[in-house]
Image 1 (cartoon, each protein chain N blue to C red):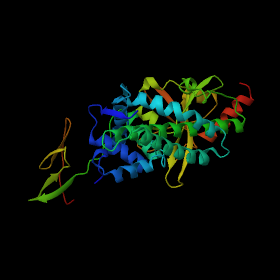
Image 2: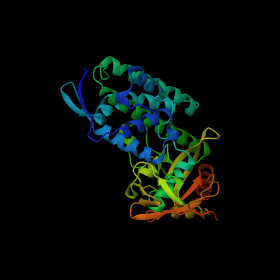
Image 3: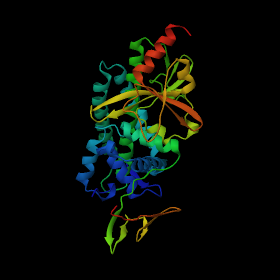
Image 4: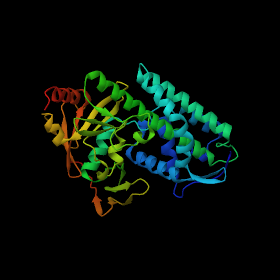
Length: 89
Length: 273
């Protein structure tokens, strides 16, 4: 777990200062740039949300990450209610 | 004149701090959300206040008076006179960062008994490193254009007022800017993208080197007789050797590899169109 600036020891903070100037702070890769461009061009935010689900009595029970509402097999994202079903076929 | 007190801007969160730290240790690993935290965090630090020598100044003002005013001109001289701009200037950049750190210690602008002063030194070093990176890239571009025989007028990096001029360079009446990272496109509001072209770069993680490219308005690219193919998201090319066009904020833009753009400009200028 990365410590914040105000939580670091003196030595840890000095170590951070030592690294300033090594890298270019704003450097971006092509995929990062294209992802941001896609987001800007489509005027919508893109976020990948990882969901875990387990099968309970033939029904999916979704475990959503913090901040995402989920009830049983239903995930709520903004105004969208998404139902996930399970099938062997 | 030691720093007496510091008041950090309200709203500076843990996420802002973590993004700033990551930009120092592993900037390529920042995701878009973290990049947004970084830029917002830097804005908050710019407006944070510090009392020094009975004056209450913003971090931005401290930077302008004591860092930019004291170190940038000499640094630019060294960059412009370097034989190998990229390698020599990067070493020089680190040297100046060390000088600024030493001055912070000497003047007691960074005090162990004043924890908030960590944010002042981190902001000043980050910001100076960021500006220096930009000046190095600008100098590289200007020298390459000169060596390639392109006719252009560049602003005078030696003069502070010119460093903040609207356009970094003008080529055949097109006004352009040199941006050391594509971040500018992400943070810019459409109203900020007023130039005809932007010379920028991305970092190729496999080749461990920067790849230069140009973003320009489609109408300007048409004047250069360039071809394009439309960008169809979510697919995108591995490079811009084949120029791609895209719509952004009621304008059509083209992204093309720097070398391809340069050869088109050279032909355009030689034909005296």
